[in-house]
Every structure is written in C-alpha cells, then in structure tokens.
Image (cartoon, rainbow, N blue to C red; front, side):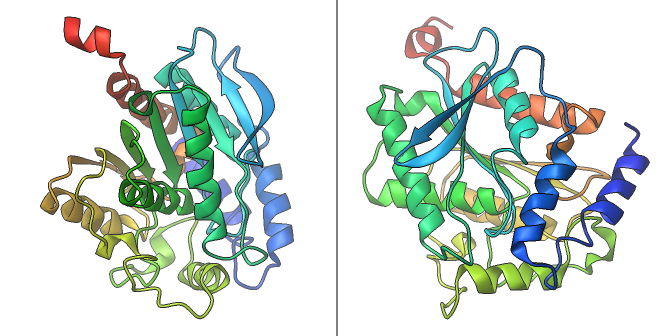
Length: 301
C-alpha cells in the first residue's frame, strides 16, 4: 500500500477513535477491526497459550529455532490493544528473528491500573525461563506502552537479580509519563496529546508520574541489556526516544536509535501492507536473531 494512503487511513480511521472522549471498550474493538486485514507472513502458526495465568498468542514461523523466543508486549496507551491487534507486527518480527513470539494479553487500565500490566509482564518472562528458554536466547520487545513495559520489566528484573534477556526492543516507546518534550501533535497522524494524558490518568491514578518507577527515562538504567529503539520522525514521542537512548548510553548501556523518516507512531504495525514498515520490522528481527545466537555458534564465529 502506498505510504500516503496508509497515512490517510491512520489519520481518519484510527486517530479520531483514539480520543479521550471515546469509551475504552469501543476503542479496543475498533483497533482489532482496523488491524484484522493486515497479513501475516506465510506459514506462521497461531496458537493459544498461557503464561503466568495470562492468555498469550504463540506465533511460530516455519523453521523457527525452538530455543529462541520473543516476549512481545503490544501498545495501546495501557488501555487498549490486544494480541489480535498486534498479531501481524509480532508475526513479522518472529519470522525475521527465527523465533517463537509470545504476545501477552496483559491486564489493561482503567480496570487494572499500575502495576498490573508490569506484574503480568515480569511473571510471563519468568515462566519462559521456567519452560527452559535460556535468558540470553530471549528478547523482550514492545511498542508504545508496550515499550514502556519492555523497559520497565528490564529494570525490575535487573533489580531482582533475575537473568536478563539478550535484548530489549523498543518501538516508538513511551518512556516519560509526564513528557516534557512532546511536540505539536498535528504532524502525527495517530497520536493526540489529550488521549495520551487520559491514558496516563487511567493507568497511574493519583501517582507521581515523574518518579523513576513510572517514567523510566529518569531511572537508573545501568546493567540493562542492549536497547534497539525505532521511532518515526513524524511522531510526537520522537524526542523521548532520543532521551532514553542518551540516558542509556550515559549509564553504560549499549543503545541504538533508528529514526524512520516520514513515518508515524508504531508504523511497524502495518508490516505486510506498507513496505517501509515491513522492512523496519525485518531489521529489528535481524537484530534479535543476531543477539540470541547460541553460545556454540558465537564461539565458532
């Protein structure tokens, strides 16, 4: 699909619904409907599973390495999104990574505010370890609010001395729940500042959102796995992606930033429809594949 057409579909088909005035239940149903036509890579097997008591979709591409896994955390402002809405993105990522992806159906706000989603994430990761996956053959990846969960889970797992994953992949991540550098939202065809604020209120009511616990851009990032960050040039969260990469590097963490010119918030969700999105997801999958190579292969390389 040509980029201008996809951009128009997002601006006029998604943006008006992701609004503070639209009930969360309707937003959830609409997002699943809008993403349903996005094709999966050929041969990807979709099965239902559970991790730590939560539903997951397990996406297994043909020829996937049975020892390699991606825990995928969907975006949606902590209030919307599902394994169904992000199935295509996660499937293309798994296919490029040669891994099985587990797309977690974590609990959403406002019914389940912080820390429910983060609790679900860390518990799901620990169950992958219990199933026999080696930590250094797992990547945690997420987009938008799922990027927040990815980074926050890395911090919590580090603090608990849990074996850390090989890589944290952040797509258009939320890293500051009280953003200080958001731009005019007219250039971003998907996100509105008012919706972001309403999501934060639902997710963390009555909490200090500038605390390191809730805004990982202010947290101690030392000792985290490498970060790969993708962000569109046209999205209002672009400056925050720059900030988290700079903060990680200052803490001694390897962090790479890829700016996708002319793209918007989580354009990766159009993998399979938009060539630029397909290429971006394939690039991230390649990084996961490289970071999760078995020890024997690494030593012989």
